Length: 471
Image (cartoon, rainbow, N blue to C red; front, side, top):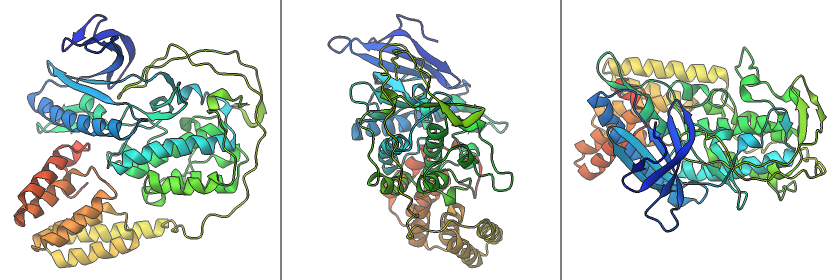
């Protein structure tokens, strides 16, 4: 842990610790090379192992993720800018823009409910920023109220604390001496099952945003909600009376199986915007509006205690949820009149969710194709993968192994096209990028092959390097 007064690179002067957790520490600092010693945030990431191979992998991941974060910060003013990334004595540091504001955990306190139109506005704001992230082929992987800031000067939403860079702190050598990710990055309650198993997708972020929406409506955190024992779907609609169209969209965002959710932020935002034209949105952020407070034991019966004004300031950085001090005034204004959402049916053009029977059938066909692939029966394997994809085109394992079979047959262009379909679903698949590079090498497209290998080296799901036939 750094002590106050430490200076990194003879430039970044550590003022105090802002937050600490399992993935590292975050500090408020000053940039002594800028006029006025502008404040910034320093995030300290330390691998758990000093093994040289672990440090080599950590260094590649750190450099790759820093490039991504730098681009995101330049593409949107609602993602903190990355000023520098440093390595000293086998430890890694990110220097990022300091954001004056508060995180959403200060707005979504236990027992506090937002109105329907406030929730619509909040999730619209989050999804608009998340769309920029997904458009850059990045999965956030740790969306939760503590990692969403509301900037004081303009009330805008900012995304902080991207999950991929946290994996540096989880790298460990296994019994074979290979470097693997020791724990899944994410937060229980906001993290869906595929992410917990190490295979996050764009829709994993959509799930987290949906859970925040449900939390805002009912005043209960996700880890307090039960799941249907048969379907594993979240049970929440019995806790609040809400417009059916709004509830249907939230339900689709938090479906247990990723193929039944909106694919990414852009698709979810399109559905969400269908509500926006039908209701007046609040002109002030929810933090400036008195909202209903419900008893956890009786969520249908709100009460309205008066709360004194208070002040908060939080330092933000990529990495941890950060402890707060400073200034953010919350006004006790009268609650605005509730506006009913019109009772409209979901758009008929939306694709129907895949049934559990179809999911099982597609998975069985995929397993059949995988066995045929191992037996070198490549054409039969491709036929099995095609049938699986016809049922469930989101089955990225089938697209990937279809590409492997085509590559074995020497059909390299077709194989590349199949690998490219994987990236629409799982953009950080090590094996798909790696095998795409092999196909490009056979075509003598060496620069393109090198690009694919570099993408593979920068993939977040490092554990996949030890799992052939998996993404």
